[in-house]
Amino acid sequence: MEALDGMHHSSHKRTLAQRIEPFFYMTLLLEIVFIILFSLFTTYGTDNVPGTDNQTDVNRYWPFYTDVTVMVFIGFGFLMTVFTDIAFR
Image 1 (cartoon, rainbow, N blue to C red):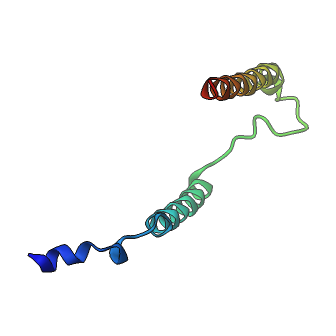
Image 2 (cartoon, rainbow, N blue to C red; image 1 turned 60 degrees about the vertical axis):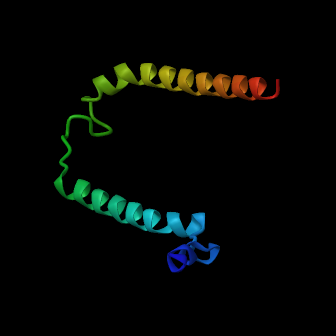
């Protein structure tokens, strides 16, 4: 019984970096595989080629996209400000 208890000394504990390292390499490998698969099996249409007159959808929706993007950044900035203000109370 004492032999089993001796196996759990601090010399056998893994640090956080040692526990995260396999996850990091597996995630990096999966990301590279997904990028390769995406580039091999994705086709793009010629509807919105730059310099053509077929960009009506892009020209119509671009202002909405930029407005929503700005609102998201301002909202998250306000949210983070409120969190730091509440944390110091």
